[in-house]
Amino acid sequence: MQDNERTGAFDHLFTETVRDGLNEEGYGSWRSIKAPGAVSLSFGFPFPESFPEDQLVAAAEAVFEQEGERALQYGGGEYVDRLTETVVERERERGIDCDEENVLLTNGSTHAIDVVCHTFLERGDEVFVEAPTFMGALKLFANYGVDVTGFEADADGLDVDALAAELDARRADGRPLPKLLYTIPTFQNPGGTTMSRPRRERLLELAEEYDFVVLEDDAYDDLRYRGDPVAPLAALDDSGRVVRVNTFSKTIAPGVRTGWVLADAEPLAEITRMRAGGTNTFTQSVLGRYCAEGRFEADVEELRAAYERRCDHMLDLLDEHMPPGAEWTEPNGGFFVWVELPEGIDAEALLPTAADEGVTYLPGEQFFPDDGGENCLRLSFSHVSLDEMERGIRALARATESTLADH
Image (cartoon, rainbow, N blue to C red; front, side):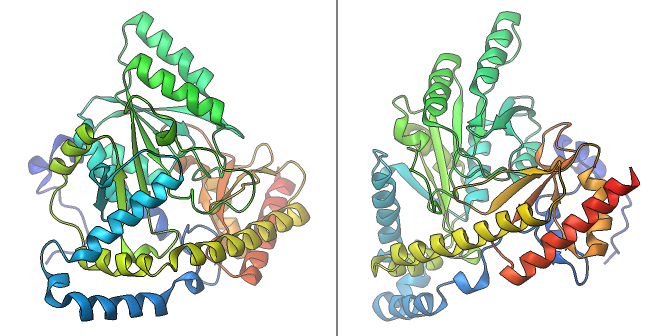
């Protein structure tokens, strides 16, 4: 086998989209930001103690006892269907009118987003997103060779007035309209913000008027620890424009790699047809048993309390240690705080200094489809201990202050 040095020998065989992205980093490359001994506030991972290991072991044993070899066959046993029923029940509790026929289980939310993209997007299509947005979604969109346009988001989420103005201008000029708009409306990654209900309603009006699909990524909706819930876009949708994706990665464990797509029957039929290969039905059986035992909601309640403590601790540390001129979001749920550094500080350029001081993070530029976010960064409070978090924020403050002193 050859080493990792590129020879270009196969470049002529790659697709045009692959050739366009040669030498660019792929999906998940942000996880490679490491510094020995530094506290990583980069990763949006659940903290290890949150995993219901004993309950999942018990559920696996019960699946083997009750379903035996059926659980290991293609399609799995009855607990796969029980998991779908659980998803439907929980989505109905959010106000979404759905049945089992509206749900497709997937290998996590990234797989769900990918299969939706595979169904709707062709090279050269237009996709609109919030800016900033989840960098993993941006990597996926790049795989499809689409043109991505970002719209500013504030404390109330996506700026739908700016979106409406752009849509109107494009229609007037005869320029391409989007086929899909991707949004994380609740506890957005990376901003931690939540789109207000009026903006959600206006977004759906625009989707109907300008004929595009809204891809709602709601991975963090279960992790609200303060404030009043806001109805999901899918619950407000009367026209079938919303395709919704969600996951158990944040509430059970990332390693179970189980998510779902929820959509009207007609688009879901084509999404199902385009899904390549099968999903991990054994894992779905275990999760189906675990949820059937009624432990899931109680475990999520404990998670909410734990993440609230972590979030509050990070906000207190930022307030205590960061220098004047730094600002940050104050989320009501989810995993992330978005930090805007004092004027003149580039978060990417600051990272080596911060790593030397003892902390890593994700620079804001990674979350934009084009230029933007140079003086911003994302911090995660979900994974590290409270003591590590304090060391990390102190290190970030030292690095920021030293860079300010050099200006």
